[in-house]
Image (cartoon, rainbow, N blue to C red; front, side, top):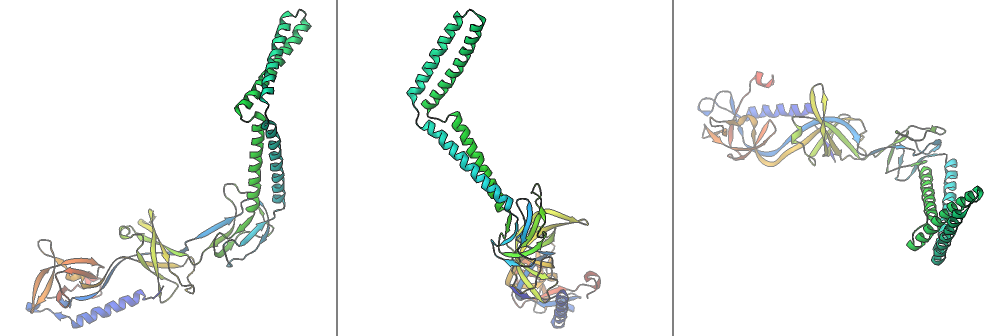
Length: 407
């Protein structure tokens, strides 16, 4: 929403004029009407707002630094800086010839691995357990036979031959027992397990090839504007390692926000959700609305000052002319009271007991009256109890030294 802007010099001029008018209509307090150097001011109804101010620069609330997810040669850049695009639009693409070949090879490797797994599983899908048990029995019988012949062997040649036969018979028996046990357990054999691992590796390679091919194209992650382009057709993009090469900077221009720096003294009063009025230095005569969305817990220290960054979302018309980087000032609405009783802040004081009081003119004489006050902006104070609209209160004048030369 756009709001008419009043510049600071205008505010000062209006304030001086109002004070002059007050002085013209206020009743001086000579003699019994009040102390010298005091004026009578009427208690009025009005609105009062307490603000905290900060300043900073306009930024975008949503942006993206887009990079290719793989290396290669830039085949085409389809946009220019400043182009407005929709989510999913293709912005740039690498030459994908080699990547498409890798993908085809990965698909073939997966098909081969799946075929080998299927053939191996077919062997174990029709297990002949009786035959497996018979194979174990035969292997054990032959081992016993070989051991018997070895014991009776006399020549060196016979001993060496039957020792080898015994060893081979032991190996065959162990293999037969393993096959029998796998069939009895209904689980995968070592060969099936190997084939399954080959299929898993082939699927992983295919997924990586598909990912590389997909990441050779940059698309718009959301609707927005191309902020900057950092690559040209024909450029060679290295494979991404720790820091991928940024190709395109992308922003949402309608999602602007102000990052305002607020003094540490004021930050305790700032809360998420508070309304804000923003004045952009480069946009004359307009004010804009905003809302506090984030308060940074980490301070910014500048020249000994402790500041905190406050993020403020903006409501900006499309034709406002606001651009990223512009300087702006934010008035954060801390407290507000509408249609409330108001007196000048200088009318309020404390009595000897520390009670909040004002001096009220009653039939030409000043009397001290206790009051309950609300919020104050440093110039006006809200009166909750103790006064009525139209009452006349005494306001002490301030000297030239106190106000720095205004009066």
